[in-house]
Amino acid sequence: MAVKIVTDSLSDLTDDIIGDLDITIVPLTVLFGRETYIDRVTITTEEFYRRLTTQNILPSTTQPTPQAFADVYNKLAEETDEILVITLSSKLSGTYQSAMSAIEMMEKKCRVEVIDSETVAMGLGLVVLAAAREARNGMKLEEITHFVQRSLERVHFIIYFDTLKYLAKGGRIGKAQVMLGSMLSFKPILTVKEGEISPVTRVRSQVAGIEYLFNFVTSFHQIDALAVEHSTQPEIADRLVDRLSVALPGKPIVRSVVSPVLGVHAGPNAIAATVLESN
Image 1: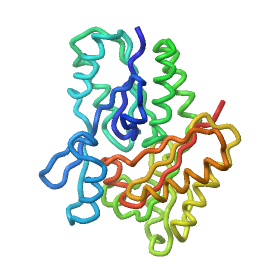
Image 2: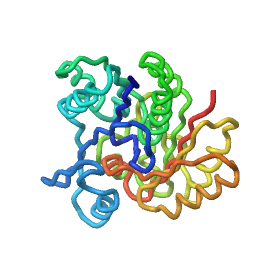
Image 3: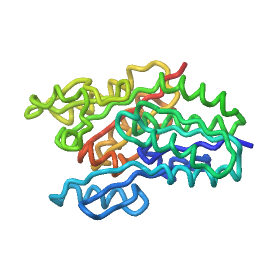
Image 4: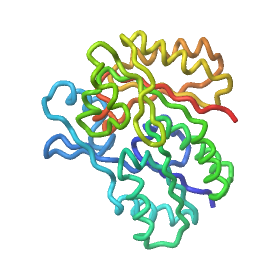
């Protein structure tokens, strides 16, 4: 029986990206005041960003419950005896802890391994896609676990922020706190380092930010996988993809949208690029 792969909605993997790969997504939750929405299930990314940019309510987020993971484990245990769960960074969310706690709540016997990716968005998503392909090819749980751990050492994720306002208000700003005072005239480019949001550099405009993302991606000589995603400006992300397609001919580029839960902290006009470097 093939290993089943589970992740959370902050992997930014949508159905069209997953395709025929066997990946189960456990969603986080967005709250607008007392209104509760399941990430990409009961609220679309388009509706979320419309509300984020037109309403005065600052949304909040919550992690999946252990029961949500346990329900997934029990269902998958009817089809397999090995499950691998890869979550976003435990320093950014309690999702990893929920996934771990759920193992004790299982009703069916099945081996479950949980990995804290120490990253987010397509930094997580590209590794999950790679793991699902290995599972489809027959790789067993222990082998895939080692494969994922090695892959996480080779994934590189940076994101251009138009503002740090949402990240600061959401309490996830981490080491990027040092950039807050200078953001009136600069735009930050951030990454996730050792599980926390960390500063990379700052630029004067979005144009300069996109140029930085382009140079970042093309600085890698060997690339296994590549992704570009946006929060509210698909046309800007598409232009970056077009440039990268010329610079890296024949290299497939995964296009995604920053999930509503991540968008609570990223805000509008964010653009991200992720590289999974070759061994």
